[in-house]
Amino acid sequence: MSELADRITGYLDTLRRENASAHTVRNYAADLDQFLAYLARAGEPPGPRDIDLLLLREWLGDLYRQDLSAVSIRRKLSSIRSFFEHLHRGGIVDVNRAKLLNTPKAPKKLPEVPTEEQTNRLLDSVAAEKLERPFPARDRSIFELLYGCGLRISELAGLSLDDYDPGEGWLRVRGKRKKERQVPLPAKARESLDRYLAERHAGREERAIFVNHRGHRLTDRGARGIVKLYAIALAGDPSLHPHSFRHAYATHLLSAGADLRAIQELLGHASLSTTQKYTQLSLTDLMKVYDKAHPRA
Image 1: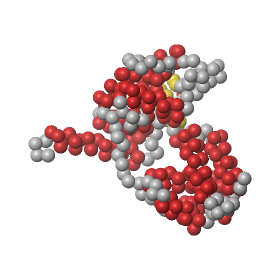
Image 2: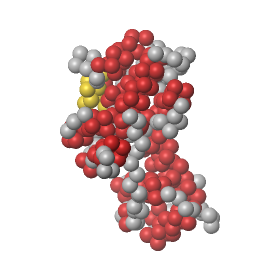
Image 3: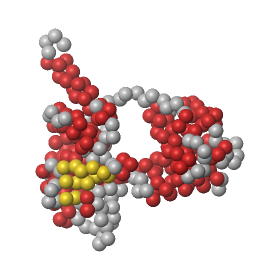
Image 4: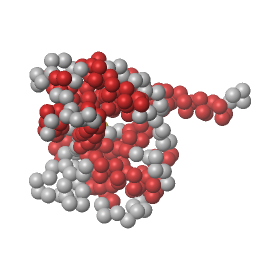
């Protein structure tokens, strides 16, 4: 194994020890494997210290030649920067040269958001147990928490029993970079969670709230599969995914008059600019109403 391959393996092991989500580790591993393959095309890849800015620019240029989207290139560049930052902190390289690469601008694309009617219709269908499923109470609770609390799927999968305060009705959620926040549970989400926990089947040592059929922690990939199954079967919409409900949570709160700063705290956004995209969504919806209803539109 080359030194670069060995360093990549060590970095991925570090991410796992730091409890990075399985989704994050999987994406970083794929990006770094492709990076290694590019550098090894002519034989033994160079060691980390020998990867200069010119070589990194050649790798970035190759991504552009593959006609990848700006979003894909940004993600791969983020993986490489994070890897070299790990090497820099460990004293393996003297500087993180990947930080010197220009980041391509991603087009501003507003997410598709289901309406309140569409969201509630789907959640009501899940609660009515229209699908024959082995753990209907768990599945309903997953949907209620995604929409009722605006959770990321990795945050939902990462919930443990100690994170739920049934007395106060709060959840302790660990977001990106393990930043913790407190999220209130609305009535339906709380009721569905209490019902599920009363019949939850898990091993004695398992502390995860949501578990799979083996009684072990449900992975974010497993939770995504559950959401996709219901979205197709009950709503006939394969485009619905877990993050759709997070978008819906923020957009519907804003439409109802919630303060943008409060939504930022509830979502766990580090920057208000990230939350502000929901104001654009609301304005877009407002313009649609105007165009349909105003006689001079």
